[in-house]
Figure (tube, rainbow, N blue to C red):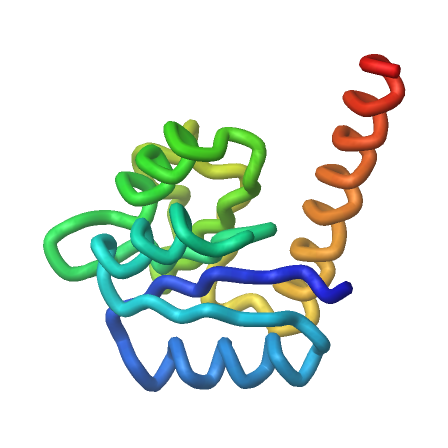
Length: 129
């Protein structure tokens, strides 16, 4: 079953392109253009990874990540930014990527985070049994 990704960006063109590319790569994708919409989806849908733009309208992607981690601390959050420097609040996210990175870097990062999450889930299950 393909992983489900939540993409959060207030720039509709970038959001649509990213969602299309991720769907073409085989992922299920939900999109949100605001923090409120993102958190509603995050709470109500089975999300495997969130990809948040850093600069959102009135809030940062790391602030949204902090809320996401309060709800589901085990779900990885990637912060994307057009800025080169690592932004404040990265302690609430798992990975920072520049939007200047080629798309295959994002795909590789997603695959790595999913593999890590799967390994952790297997370890937790085997410890309980």
